[in-house]
Structures are given as structure tokens and as C-alpha cells.
Image 1 (spheres, one colour):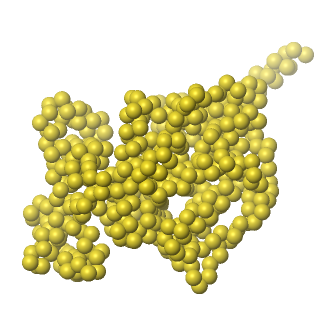
Image 2: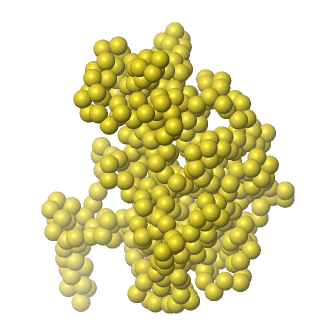
Image 3: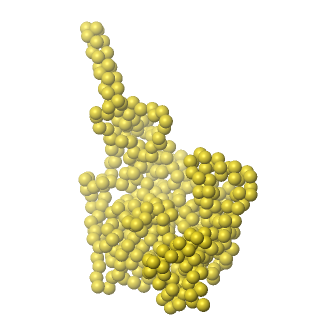
Length: 482
């Protein structure tokens, strides 16, 4: 009896290894790709059926040890999952990635708040409204599901605690969804955060969006479309909020709480208008833009993901392609929207870039950039570091220098553009006159932009004189005016 059994086991083993070899070489069987960010390696450690084998191993860890090998996820009570960045922030550890001490942190946050206030005030001169959304955190809203070992230190302050105080003192427009969620979590009929996700639930995003619209109405003294939202409903076929569970790459779902959703529709009447909206923010906005027909509410809505990738704009894919001044002057509302763990780098230099663009001509900005690049060239250690960086990235040295100079400029914009140090900067980019219907200089600038042949001539002139186009336009317009 033993020999046939051994033979069968050996045969099965050979079959398994043969199937693994065939799958590795030709992939005849389709497998579901693993979730998460993958890194390309020169010598990949790949075997046939790699994905399902990893899922089975992960399922073993989950079922037998209630563990996961995903470092960015903390497993809490009742299978609640948390992103560890938010947990670290809750414990007062996350801010240390952004500042060497608490005094420096506070100064950095105050600097960002003051920049936002300056941009807010300048945009208000042109009938534009800027406001900040302080997005919430699952850890701060539902700390009761954290493991018992997780206890925050006493008197712990985070950016989510400091920014409201700074905004109130400076007069920055903002909506604090974080504190709102903490107040209403026990009184609403729906979950504000999902058991297995890191962002607010889709149904919570509906109610947040309606609150944002009401805030816009008050700020702009206008009437906007409304969201008519039904009572909370349950449906096992609805796509759940499970972005963290997907990262676990398990063999079977672990969700044991019914999916919540709500029916809704957009309500408009003869008094409502459709304004334009620019959002600079993080991934929380996806729960709004994916599930709500914003094109029924706004004439246009652009989303700048971390002030880098551009979405819902058919003409641009990243912010480097965009004329920031033109964008700001052609929207009604500008929103900076970040969650608690991302507040330490809030706006990703958008506030500094907007402030410089609104207040300074290109000539002034280019002069500051040139001064930085001259300092690079005149510092042997610095230029050597940049050369190494250019070689490692396979990019031209001048491109690397320009990118680093731009970053330095906007990190320390008040240092390189002293006019921006004022609490209420009075200088303005001359190109802003093109948006002033009563400005004679603005009439000339608009005529230039509306005349293709004229613009081609100006572009050629800029190339011949090695100047930027805006500088040439302003010089010629001023010459014609005077």
C-alpha cells in the first residue's frame, strides 16, 4: 500500500512543479494581480502562480495569527484597519518627519497659514473665494477600535489641532470636517469611516459635499444646486469602501459589516448657478469626484492631486503645463483640502506659487531663480552634488539645477521675493491687468492675446532677446501705452 501512495504523492508533486514551470514560462492561466505599489527589479523573484500563493500565505497569517505583513496597516479591534501614518500622527510621532522640534513645526504651519491668508485676500480683490477643508482621520474619529496598546501621550498636539487656532487668528476661511465628524459620529445613521478603508465612506462624502456647497453659498452669497440624499440603505452588491483590505491581498474578503449607501440626485432651480471650482488636495477628494456628478453642479471642476497631477481638465495632465495666474483668474472657488496626516505639507507649495504668481512679474521671479542657480555654479560642493544627481537620474544638469532652484524658491519664497514678506503684499503681477476691464494696459494685453499673428511676433521677439514671453508682452504694452 505504501508504494502506490508514494508514487501518487511523487506524481502530484511533479505535476505541481510542472504547472508552476509552465505558468512561469507562458502564463496560460490568468491570475488576479496583487494590489499596492510594485517596484521593478533587475532580477525578479518570480514563480508561476506567485499571486495566488502570496494570497494564500497572507490568508494564513490573517486566519491563524490575526496579522498582516503590510507595514502601513494596523489591525484594530473587530477587524478595523488603520493606516499607520494616521496612527503615528495620533501618537504625536508623524510631525517629526517634517520638523526637528515642535517650535519649528509651529513656525512652519504658521507660515503656510499666512501664505494662504495672503492668497485668499488677493483673490478676494477679484471676486474669487479661497477656503481650506481640514479633512478628518479615522483614528481621531474612531479611536475606540484601536488596539488597547495604542494610547496617545497627554497634551499631544498635531497639525489638525494647531491649524484651526492659526486660521482663526489670521482669518483664513476653512471648514473643519475633522471636529465635525468627532461630534456627530454617535448621532448619524451611517458610518463616517468604513471598517476596512482609510478614507471617509462614500455616504459620508455625500453629506460632506452638501455641506461644502452650503458653505460656498454663504461665502459667495449665491444659490447653488443641492444634493437630495435619501436615508441610509444597505445592499450587499454595492462596492464597499475597502481600500485598506485590498492592500492585504487576502484570498477571500473579510468584511462583516453590511455596505451602506444612499440614493441621491442634484436639485437645481432658476435661481441656482454653476460656478467653477479648483481643488488642490489629496486622495480624500476621490470619494467625492468618483460618486457625485460634479459636472451637474459646477461649470468646470479641476482637481490638482497633491498640486502635481491634474484631473478633469482635458487640456493638461500636470500642473507644470498650467499658467497658474490664468487658472486662478478663471475660477470662482479655490479649495485646499488635506487630511490630518498630510497637513504638515499642506498645499504642496501651491500657496507659495500662487502668492509669487499673483504679486510678482516673471522678470522678478526669473531674477530670483537666476541668483539661486548662480549660487549653485559658484559653490563647488553644490555643483558636484547636482552633477551626481543629474547622472543618476539621466537628466541634463541644467534641468536638474532649474528644478532644484524652483523648489528652493518656493520653499523660501519670502526670502527670495522680499515683497511677499508683508502681511498684506501690495505689489501685483502686471499681467493681472489683463483681467481688469477698466485698465488701458489690460486692453492692450488682451488684444495681444486675441491676435495670433501678434502673439507669434511677440514669441519670436522673446526668443531673440532671450526673455520670457510675459516680460516682452508687458514691455511692448507699456511702450504702446506711453
